[in-house]
Image 1 (tube, rainbow, N blue to C red):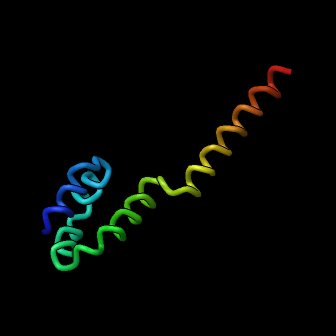
Image 2 (image 1 turned 180 degrees about the vertical axis):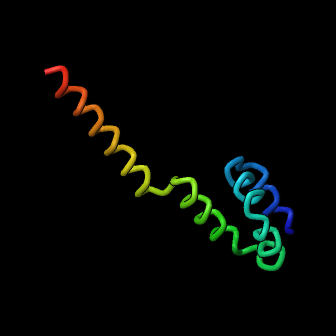
Amino acid sequence: MKIDVQFKIKNDPLLQKYIRENSYWYKNLNRNPELLGTLNNEMKEKYKLTTADKINNFSEKLDLIRTFINVFK
């Protein structure tokens, strides 16, 4: 695996965790280092770190706050 790909994985704890759980990525990155972006997107989908997931999480928190406010009225 290329050194720059190794550094990027080493510096991102979530990426490191994901690649350990899905070891087939080692082989894929050895053969084609350009797949690092695909790996990163797959990791974000798995751990729900995409923009859509963040917006959904925020809206759920707002709904919870609204519920608490309505209970105290």
